[in-house]
Length: 72
Ligand SMILES: [Zn+2]
Ligand SMILES: [Zn+2]
Image (cartoon, rainbow, N blue to C red; front, side, top):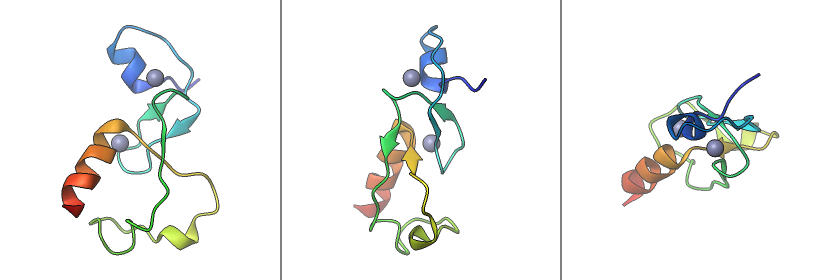
């Protein structure tokens, strides 16, 4: 079973409910951030076309942070 990476860093064990679409780390409900993203449209240097995804998209807090930095 996939574990939440951030919880694991804090010596907790939580089952992951999603995966960060950028770095691929497992994320639990508490740490998964829904990526609702106009901001993906050509903004982030990743080969991601937001419109192609029908599945929920998640980001970890680290990638959320660096994404906002990239936008600023
Ligand atoms: Zn977690
Ligand atoms: Zn990430």
